[in-house]
Image (cartoon, rainbow, N blue to C red):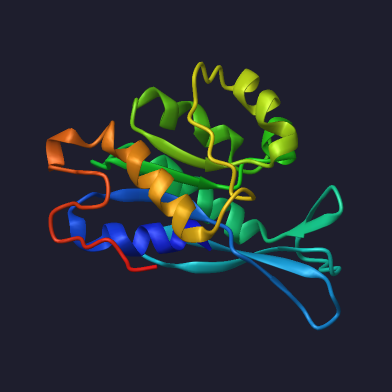
Length: 180
């Protein structure tokens, strides 16, 4: 996962990132399930699956763990009370466009004016931009290039924001660019 690798690079740099990651994995049955990872802290929760779970909330074709949704929303709302240099939201998708999942936390995060990285499916980028009035976002298509090339694009993008921390494209204090 590209964002996880990026976070690993940031860790020793002094650049504080906060947010949520939702890594997915395929089960033996071929179904995909997702977990929720809170950043920082690394707490993990089972998030969603298409396999029936009577104790979880049904949204679309998925079953969502209400404990994970509650923890993710609480975590995102707590982020605005602390000092971060970057927010990560993985993934903003069709459910958020309908006001569900992470959507309630987005306005407060946007109000902070802190750089953000959102993962968004290519087919809904315009809808996401319109819903949250994102005037001129930098769009990096993860389907166009190798992970190291995508990481370099993110580093260059960050260069425009984190000047106060001596960030340079490819190098920050205590941080070395990984080798390909």
